[in-house]
Amino acid sequence: MKEIKNDTEELRSKLLLDVYAGAVAGMPAMLLDESRIKNADEEELKKIAKEYGY
Figure (cartoon, rainbow, N blue to C red):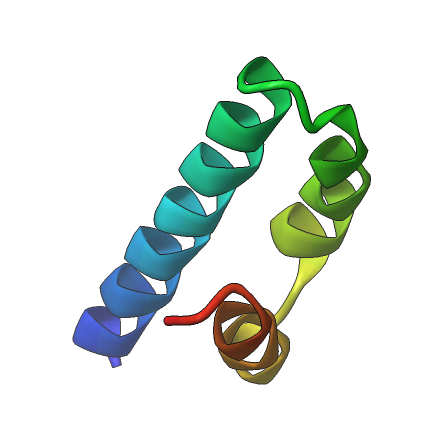
């Protein structure tokens, strides 16, 4: 169970880094996904990751 939690938090971290990098690169609309990613459960994070091409 702890490993799943770590994997989920690692995915959350990667997605947030993508959001912040996109915002800095001139796509500030990516910040709209920040709260969605921060509040997502494991299944929602997987869905978001697919949207981001992971």
